[in-house]
Image 1 (cartoon, rainbow, N blue to C red):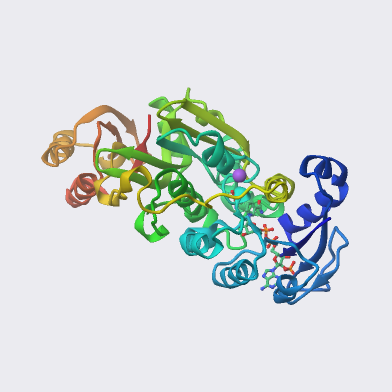
Image 2 (image 1 turned 180 degrees about the horizontal axis):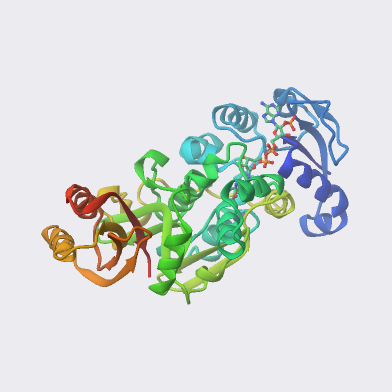
Length: 420
Ligand SMILES: NC(=O)C1=CN([C@@H]2O[C@H](COP(=O)(O)OP(=O)(O)OC[C@H]3O[C@@H](n4cnc5c(N)ncnc54)[C@H](OP(=O)(O)O)[C@@H]3O)[C@@H](O)[C@H]2O)C=CC1
Ligand SMILES: N[C@@H](CC=O)C(=O)O
Ligand code: NA
């Protein structure tokens, strides 16, 4: 029998304990051994729970208990779980975690500490989708060309409900929290940070990039308006919060932001809490992984898959080597990324305005791909919408500052990156 200790018996932890108990027969058949949750740590021992396992309010007790063979970390946070996971590994106990914030900051230190002790983290990226397993195992023969996808269930659920049903931002965020999709601090979701944590984990497995969240572009969905969605559709695009990691001549681009993607693409059709990640390998070509990105049971499914792997005796390097993987490709600095852009400007409706705007873009070497002019609510203003050909982020940022200084342009200029 293998005994499991769970740090955090909340949305995911509770589901893990329940599934281990309720699906014990099938799990035992697949793992080859009985797997039993024996102890959980929580903050509040008096809170009602949906599952009955022994509880403590001292996480250290779970790690130290001679009765616990594998430690599962599902409490969230960064430094506290780091200390606990480290302690468990140093005590020689395998660890499973769903904590992407922890891994975004400490994955390489933990890989070092773990050594031969298994440290598995399938649930940390795209919830129930086995994307870590796909990269570590199924696609291990490939150099990875790109990884692109919807990696935050809360944002995709919110965008879908806001766009398709017109539900207000605050209301739909509350729904996502009640459904157990959102992080303890939901600004991690809507601000793009959670998707960035996941992207960094994938970027380490695919490319050996040892970057921190502060080193990549992270933008959320707070600024996306229904008007942008409507205009995006006129150009044939949908808007999704994407994580993108792409190998190019200068290294690896990594970024998270609201993105205009062709309405006909598969990812554009992914709605609600579902995530989808496209991985292009140099030998296999494009592969696509789809499934629930958040929620107790879906996430617990991935956590238990890791436990089963450990019980079967699998391990291997947690991420792969830090240096030397993909010839030590560097991270491309945010200002050097190259992509296409959508711009929305409100301008005075008078002769010569369009020329001023297009010549300003031209000064920064930005070439216009298509343009639309739309009436605005104010009679003396119009909206100009552009999509551009590829240009460097630095040039686009400089051009936006120059546009804002034109006397015919109103202060706010909306920019959304396009990914084809
Ligand atoms: N929810 C989801 O869909 C997904 C979550 N994750 C990750 O899984 C982890 C858990 O998420 P989730 O289950 O949603 O979070 P919850 O907030 O629902 O659960 C957290 C649990 O940890 C306990 N806890 C927190 N701090 C401490 C502490 N200092 N000492 C003891 N116990 C503590 C809480 O106790 P108490 O119950 O008493 O408050 C609670 O039981 C996070 O890292 C999250 O990012 C990953 C993928 C999907
Ligand atoms: N808050 C996250 C949970 C899963 O990782 C999300 O919404 O995707
Ligand atoms: Na996963």
